[in-house]
Structures are given as C-alpha cells and as structure tokens.
Length: 170
Image 1 (tube, rainbow, N blue to C red):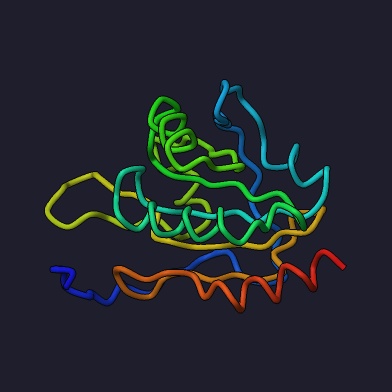
Image 2: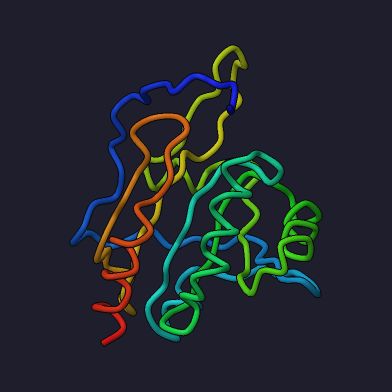
C-alpha cells in the first residue's frame, strides 16, 4: 500500500482547447545531448503531445513516462516533456527509462506558469513545479485536447488521450 494522501488541487486557469499554446525556447534533452529548441520547432514538423510533469525522480514522473514509453505514441506525433529538472537530471531519466522522448528543462517553471499549470509546493515559499498536464497541439500550436490534474497525485487518462492522438494524427 502506498502511503500518501490524495489532495485536491486548486482550480487551474490553463490554456484551453481551441487556444494557441504559448511558444517557448528551453534546453531540449535527449539521451545524447541537449540544445536550445522552441516548441514551434517541433510543431512545425507536425502534431505534438506536450506533457508537463513534476521533477525527475518523483514517483509521478516515473509512472507517467513508463506508461508513455510503453504506449509508443511517438509513432503518431512528437511526444515531449516539460519539468523543472535540469538537463543533467533529464538526461539521466531518459537513459534510465530508455525513453524515446525528449524533455524540455525549465528550472524556473516559467513555461508551466505560461500554460497555467504551475503548482506551488506546500511549505516552500517561492518553490513551484508543474502539475501533471497534457496538451495535444496541432501544427499551428492550437490546443486540440487538454488534460490537467485536479488532485495530487493524478495521472492522465491514457486511453482517452490515445484516442485523441489517433484522431489528431489522421
């Protein structure tokens, strides 16, 4: 039995379906290197599944990325993550989880703030991380589907997202 409390999160004023997702540039990390890249660089190549998650090493990150790795959504679109972890931590996560996905490093959490999914950590003044969230974006960065956690911990509805991804990729 896992020993943690489920906690409701405050409402999030997040980017919604039909809105254009904010563009940003951050270090994009894979298993070999990292370099600055923008979200629009990725959407220029096709649809993107943008996954916000807590820092690397937190159990939700492990569960989310194991599930996404096993579902092989990258056959249909680009899957990319965003968290407050550093490029060094991202590189380690990608290697350990044998992930085919790249991760944006956003230690300042400014990207999560722009998307309306920043979550202030209890008892830590000025410290926040993204709450789990998934945005499916088309080539124009228009949000086609949005899911944002309403409690902690909460995980994406993977089957529903998979159906949305298949519809977007058609």
